[in-house]
Length: 511
Image (cartoon, rainbow, N blue to C red; front, side, top):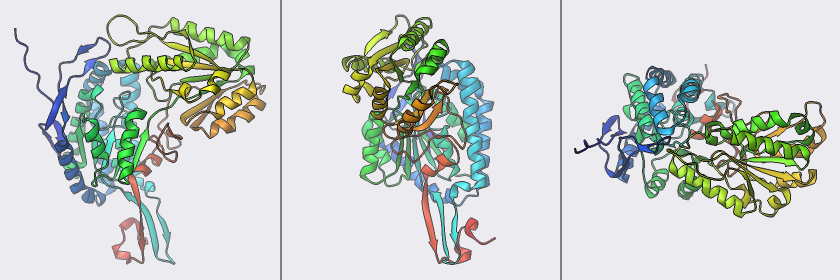
């Protein structure tokens, strides 16, 4: 019996769902079983991007003058549409990513996504992101304004909260009055399609141009680089691998186009010795919990743990290994995710690390990998700091065991840039003198510094910084989470000099 042909999904360009000018198709898999999901999606040629860019450029000026209330109302209506279609969206994401329905997708990530959209709506209304500055004596007026069409590349690990058509970059760009071209991630293409359909419904009757939001599913590397460097683009937001991000950055930088990257982070956690003696089991459980949550597929999961040699450190590593061995790992996002994790662990071993436990693919259906604990001495880490800071994206952590305080300080000084860095220390104050030596070094290496708390969670708060020095991001002065600060990436500074009062934007005129 012949199988029925699978219809290829349409792209959303210029306010219409239309057939793609595709160079090929792809079919997502269920990573928990390895089976195809029976849906085809197009790999767009440049012509699809060109049409989307033309449509976005045509509406950019119109959007700049649309009242903030209409932009805010669209974002709120979109959040409501996502909630109304939550069951189908969550089920699609579960099938495409193997992430659990509850609590991860239904109870945590989708509410976080709708909260971001509503926070962006509030910011659009308030307008504080404009950072208005007025010198009436000199008749000078300055403010931030929309930068123009924004391309958003979503990552593989957050199908809702960082999705190109619904996530934080999307919300920030829309709040500032920019049209968005979303590049969905192929690992959750159907999820993205359902979310785009909700966005299209929210746009209908909103007073915003239909091309305010557009979406394509996949492009080849050459097309992607051409997209971020096109003259019609205002800026790009990207979350993903360092390799892909740097290629896009090179293309955008070559023509002076802003691109904001979140790429690679090891999120070092330092366990100070006096506190460790008191909390071996508790802290080992917290580390193991953080490393294995979502199979370690968070940009803020710890990949490096620093300790000072001693009985407590040895007991701690035994506890972490035991915790890893007692838990059945969840599926990774794809076969390529598992292959890349295994290759990274192989490279870390070649650089001097040894495997305490794990380091192997697991048998059976789907893409699972044994939770892996690596060990390296502080001396070995200092001999090859670059090679031993290779990111292993998944359920893995490497313990760096320093001989003494000085060696630990030197190791921290060798760290590359990270999103987060954390210290666990004694509540009695017994570690305070050592903390005072180490914390200033760590502070320069990370965007967010934590005490006595794993870095995995990223609160959606105006005070949050989800950024950091390279290679965590492409620029240490910006955040991908935290409205209104995250909106700044998709704005341009404008100044009016001696412009007549009636010609100024309304928000710059004298009340």
